Image (cartoon, rainbow over all chains, first blue to last red; front, side, top):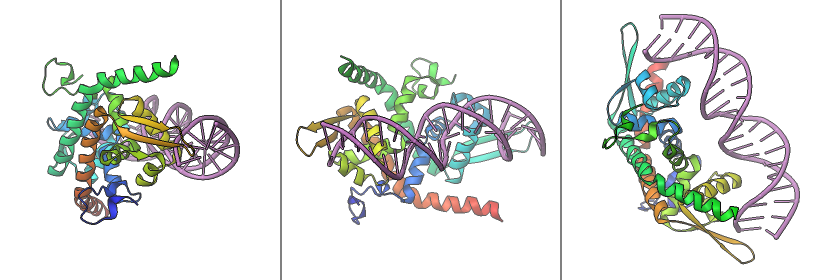
Length: 130
Length: 130
DNA sequence: CGGCATCCTATCGGATACTG
DNA sequence: CAGTATCCGATAGGATGCCG
């Protein structure tokens, strides 16, 4: 056990402990498609198909599954309009927005820093090829 | 393609596009064990075994793999002391610290908000059980 | 259009055994 | 202690087909 168990420890990050409920939540937020869905919804609500195009490369099945999980966790709202053809909008809840904004910041940071990462990879690989 | 391609768009999040290099980077940072390793190393450098205990539930294999990936991406440094028994320390680079601090903040947020998520799950499940 | 059910395979990831 | 190698089961996740 780490520092996690010390009550009132400002550094406690109990998510590191196995079997901790918060770990499951973190896994949903940081899941491959969850990250991208949340980041997209920061901008505005999206329809299912829109979201699928916006988050390139996600299959219908995985998008559905991701949306369900995030909806159940209270991060987003599903609004199905009773029209034909069907129209379903997804938007962030207040809780979801808090998560999404952090995830979005991380995504932006990653984009800015990707060149540095690519340089690091080259250096790493070359150091072992020679 | 989304807003990503519009040059100079302050809202561009090109990571959403498939085949974008930054997406791979984001996946490393937000990987299940990557998140927890980074969050742990914010506090201080760790030895391999220490890290394994701190990040409960991670197998030796996955920890090794995660550390290799993050090292290659330039997020952390591996310092092997030439002693017997072997001793290897892992610490954050400047680049890694930038990522780790955001990930750490997200982990802390998740812990604070986990009760809300659990409540949302109960509400969601009950709404469909009845 | 926005699902859901089924099938099927690639990858993930744990357990175990062995090495310097 | 900090790995590496191998095996192998679990599951993530794509493809397809059907429905309201």
